[in-house]
Amino acid sequence: MTMQKRNGGFSLVEILIALALLGFGMVTLFNLFPLGLQSLSYSHRLNEVSLLAQRKLEELKARKPIPLGVTAGKEGEVIWSISASKATLAPGIDATLVQLDIDFNFQKASQRQSFVTYLPND
Image (spheres, rainbow, N blue to C red):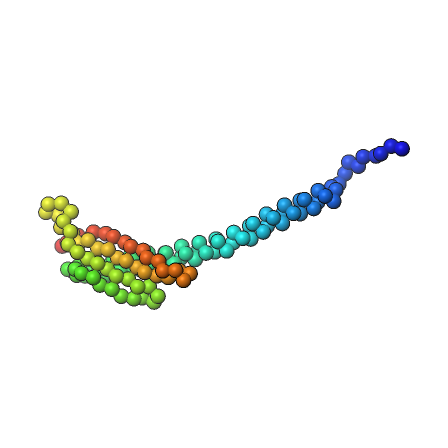
């Protein structure tokens, strides 16, 4: 008796291995989606904070003279504070050092973003 070799098709073991690899790959990819959504949500929140900071600094620049000291407030769930003090950058060049701190929550964790700039004295 001679044994004949089959040249076509896949064996059951090969198909099971391929399905296991495919399943493992899909599970890995599906686990990445929540992480991507969390990163997207955090970047959206940081964008909102940056826009608030820009608006607050523009409001401060529009006020002449710039008030020195600490000013604080709340907008929605965001708490902000502005600290302004005199600064001398070089002899004869005076400016106002402004630090804007914005406190916000993201996923039940308190976050703080600080923005520091110098505004010219007019």
